[in-house]
Length: 143
Image 1 (cartoon, rainbow, N blue to C red):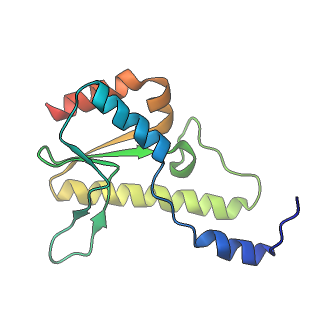
Image 2: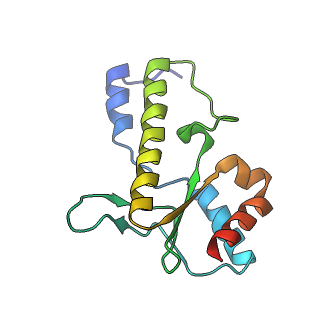
């Protein structure tokens, strides 16, 4: 079916759509937490950088008492080295988009570490294929 919008109009429309994380992957990790009786976590809790900075981030899961932030990174959006792929159309845009996402991830990691937080990043593919490994990694970090 042909698009009713021009490329410029479609781009403008799509740029206004904001998502709130990868809900199905996050939900599967929350289900794993519950099945393993891992408690003390909150979803989408904001972490701020202090009074002098404007830094704010909402990790997918936050263990506040342990100062542990858990991010579930989608293979497509965060450029998984094994499963991430670039769309064929508009390669320059997508290459820049993925590079910006990865740079933001590195910035968030650095900033949270400076604030005394520990970070765990879990690839979407790892969670699907090896959930037991992801849980063991998390349990080690919580001890």
